[in-house]
Length: 306
Length: 283
Image (cartoon, rainbow over all chains, first blue to last red; front, side):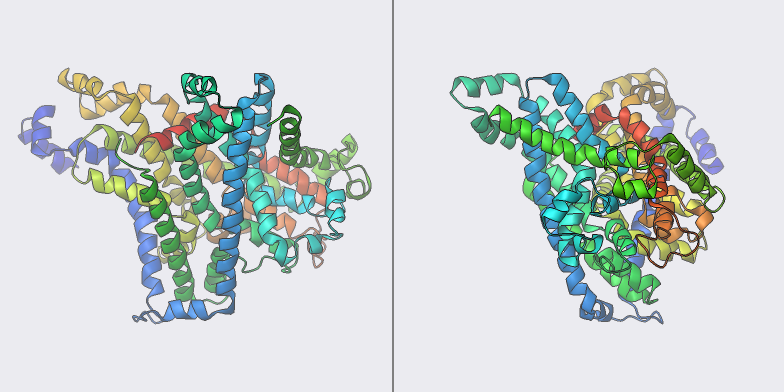
């Protein structure tokens, strides 16, 4: 630092002279701390993951051995299938219901009611993470749940029956939707408010009903925000960990252990002491989610320079 | 959609979103017996609430307060560092020219799309290699790396602050840092609030990272502490020993754990819209 300022002084001392000596000097100063964190917690862990994924326990290059070991593990295919199924349910319900509810709220004449509803839909977002699982453990236990009558109507009398492995995609989708959907409804509602009233009025004069306006005017104009929601929800959903982990804990391992890829990676690392395979699972998950996100981004022209 | 159907749909979702929250609040006022046999949406009693409170705080000598304090320390430290790092970085990306600007922007977008929990296990290996596992900084520093915040700040300055304003300040003899501090920073209040909100909520509710990096119970943030309490509830873990935690105590602990985020949420609806819409409008 002192050397830099001395050099700067020699170059003339005025800001203009310093700028000429080192163009972009200030910019570099502003981003330097961020770059340090980016390297330490973005680049290095990624490098670590790749390094471990391709070496064996003694640090020698192992080719794809860790990947084949992961793929050969009986839990891998099912964990991948679980995550894929969960993502399908979660993303479809998110797109259909969030857009649908935002449109319904937007068409509501009573503004006060709409505002209150948006807030109440949004509130469970404060319970993201472990808190939401605590709440849903109770909601899914027929003996204490306020919806116990509903669960029993489906023939589910015990907590164990409710969280049977086959039900988990629905259960996890319900939890994720409960915490996450309200925020997106608020966002979509805001996006709907940005659509010019003249456009809607013109469609109405042309004889379009609310349904047609939604389908031909509002939803196409929401497209970009829907893509944005899907990209972020996909990234969050793919890293599923806390919900099945705590469900597994609460059901004594009946459901949820090694349910998702992140849990499997965690188990490889901390139960089996097999860091190479753990890293291989992380790398697969990272590559797949990144590729999907990039495809979405490119296809939708999302980050087009504006 | 006809009015009655719409009302029905909106009410059904209102019940879905609101009843669990209401239930949670009421559950903290009941005994475990009332929880099972009483009306699920009834109020228990103040004495039961006091009893649950005493039982919860007695658990491992005020462990719940220690966990809440840990959460507060981790989230606030991370909040301060995040803002100090993120705001200048986003500003420089939007308002100044320097070598590597485009590369940094692309790297930020890529990392933003990377699911960060996937990096938790590699992060553990890295932090283990520098012998920081179990230290406060092992969670605070990763929390402080917040590319989404950099992106939001970049968008904000790129759209809301004219470059000419800064050029004028420079001509008037302002240094680069002076231009940032006197011109840009006062205009940045909305985006500072926005980044702060997202960062605080994300860090307060994070589970996986502290779960892996902080092995000792007295370092847990409250989210991981909830997991510990859960494993001592006999109904969810038949092998729970003598430290048994009753279900209403778990409900009360959950309420305490979410209170700070709930308070932030009461004021945040506006941030959410402006922030997310800004994030989606320009690239």
